[in-house]
Every structure is written in structure tokens, then in C-alpha cells.
Image (cartoon, rainbow, N blue to C red; front, top):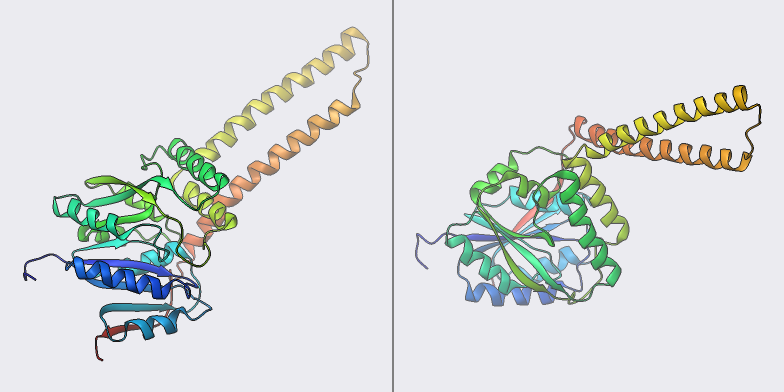
Length: 316
């Protein structure tokens, strides 16, 4: 290996990946044997409650270039990715998940694009195996809705699977958000970016770590992080409803004073009241989401806490 050859790290968050670890290590070693630029694999153990940590020690202790970072508890996937980037010492890093749904062959193509001068190379999911129609539809809808509501030109049908040059990593580290939305921030940073289409495979073992609840939380975090449009929409709708309510009051007075007839329809009045009350509660919820985000940012707590870290030395 030439001394001048630039090196790349793999950043891989882990959360209860006991079933995946033997498969993952085997595939990583196979990939590294064909790609000498991969000098470092950084695992971030995000508070796993199974044997993930023990298996990393067992499976990599006789190998070189493995770095395990153990969180003190579960801090979440986006924080785990952020922590992994903090520990990168090479010229670039590839963010990928432990489930191997994002194929290593595509990671190799990312390296080629980076070597040709691109700063960010992201994967675009052309096909997605092993996912329900509902999940595919909601994911597609979210990206298009996010692009509209934020005016951020985020690539459609992408995840966190991407290569980042060292200068992009440094730029990302300068952003101090407590609740980062990684793929959105990388897009916001700019630099020379290009996408690579790939076939996203089904999970090799274990269960997904992103159920519907976590997906909704990630979506809300993404929207409140990059857009104040929901607040402006709430203001506009509130103004329109206030104008309509004022017109309605004038109409009631007109009927009562000049037409001498009672206004029938208590049921319709009740429905209107419930509708307006529901709209108000919805908008209070939107405001609350932004207040919660502000509260999280101003506390200035550490993004994550480490229990310990470990590096393999290849000793047999």
C-alpha cells in the first residue's frame, strides 16, 4: 500500500445487533481485503442490551483496525452517527448501518467517486427489498414533503448511507445541534455532492431498529430542525379562520336584527366549535414541538456520554 494513499473509515452504529455481528464482521473483512483504503472500522455501541459488545471483542480482537465506542446508554441513531464522525482520523468516512441493507459494493463505488474529486457521495435507493408497501410509501411521501416544507434540496430516497470527505466531517462537527438530522445537515453544508443509485437489500438477520414510532419522531425532528413553515402556516390558517368567524358574527347579527328569524342548527354550531377547537389544539401542538426543540438546544447537555472505548490490535 502506497504511503500517499488516502485512507477511509467505516462508521457503523450498533444497537442490539447480536444476530448480525458474525455476518457483519465476515463481510467487512472480505470487503477490506479487496479495498486497502479501508484502514479503520468504527463501531458505536448505542446502549445495546444484548451480546453485541461482547461479540465485537470476540470477533475482532485478532483483527486490526477496529474501534469500539460504548455509550453509557442509548442516545439514538443520529447521535451515534455523530459520535462516530467525531472519532474519525482518516481522510474520509462512510456512514452505514450494521444490517448490510446498504451493500458494501456500493461503498466501494462511493470511494471511487470520492477519489475522482467529490466531497460527498450519497446512496439513492432505487429499489428496496424486505420493506412493506406502507413503509415505502410513507418514506417516499416524507422526503417529498420535507423538500417542500423546508426548501432544502435534499436528495430524494436517500438515507444516512454516504461518504464524507474530511473537510465535510470538520464542517459537520462545527454544527452544535443537540438533535442533529444527519442527512439534512450534510445537504445543508453544501460542497460537491453526487448520488449513486443502488438496490437496497433486505436485512440479513435481526429486526429493524426503526419502527413507526421512531420514524415519526425522526420526521418531526427533521422538520422542526430545518423549517419554520408550519408556524407560518398556523398563523395564516388562524388569520383566515378569524376573518371567517368575524364574518359569521356579522351575519348572525344581520339575521337577528333585520330578518327577525332565529338561527337554527345547534348541531352545526357544535360541529363548528369542535372543529375550531381541534384546529387550535393542533396548532398548539405544532408550537409545542418547536418549544421542545428550543428547550433541548438551550440546555447544552452533552450529546452523548461514553462508557469506554476499545481498539483491536490484531494480537493472536
